[in-house]
Amino acid sequence: MADPTPVNSQITDAVTQTNVKVVAEAPAQAIATLYQVASHSTGLSLQNAVQSQQALNQISSAIVSKAAALIMAIGEKP
Image 1 (cartoon, rainbow, N blue to C red):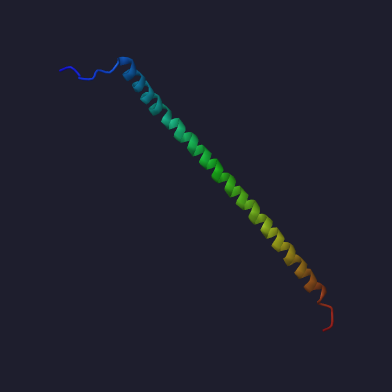
Image 2: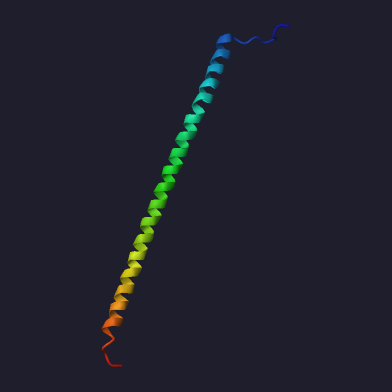
């Protein structure tokens, strides 16, 4: 039985080639997205580490100055 609405073979060929192209490129797209997400996560973790180190440096400066003040006050009379 013949198809009531025949489709041009060029159209079906173009659709088929497009589908094959999309399926063939999907793994590469997935890996590229994975690499981008992984590098973004690594960058964020490094930024967090730097920020944490800077905060600890500020706290340690305050602690050292307080400790120095306490050491200097040892010899003073109340």
